[in-house]
Length: 170
Ligand SMILES: CC(C)(COP(=O)(O)OP(=O)(O)OC[C@H]1O[C@@H](n2cnc3c(N)ncnc32)[C@H](O)[C@@H]1OP(=O)(O)O)[C@@H](O)C(=O)NCCC(=O)NCCS
Image 1 (cartoon, rainbow, N blue to C red):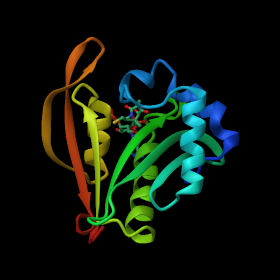
Image 2: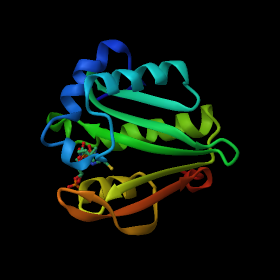
Image 3: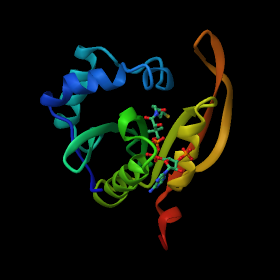
Image 4: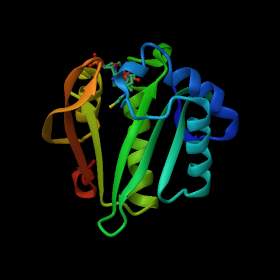
């Protein structure tokens, strides 16, 4: 199995729209995230225009589209990037695709774009994403209690971060 990531292009927008609105994906993503075609197209265009501060990447498995992931610069001065919008198509889950793609993105952000700290947040109910984040080296830094209204209830946000030096020796 060959896992690769590449910048999303306008040709990917319809496929991304289908994935992000899938009933096995949408409930786990931030409510504020763009899931409409125009919003996704705007993000893809921004990713191409501002590659150092914003990214939308398609995950490919053996050349076939299998998922999406993204980042946004949170602090230029402190070299912090926030990761978000990770989703693997249901037919590709449970094989380590997300883990391998996450490691590729980490190296791109640290080694090529010069970030120093990567951050992400998961809903407290998203056990699969929490396990994935821990497997790929993220350190749990805290919980924002009942911070987001989702599915009609207040949800915790579990905060994770990864530093460049956390990967040393890997
Ligand atoms: C979160 C998400 C991206 C993780 O993808 P995934 O398929 O569950 O995770 P992976 O592809 O890394 O596979 C991991 C699972 O496969 C198993 N596995 C099998 N072979 C594996 C391998 N070679 N390497 C790692 N894990 C492997 C692991 O045991 C693991 O099982 P577990 O989650 O029950 O512990 C995916 O579930 C998803 O898209 N969810 C909906 C959207 C979402 O929640 N996004 C995150 C928002 S914060």
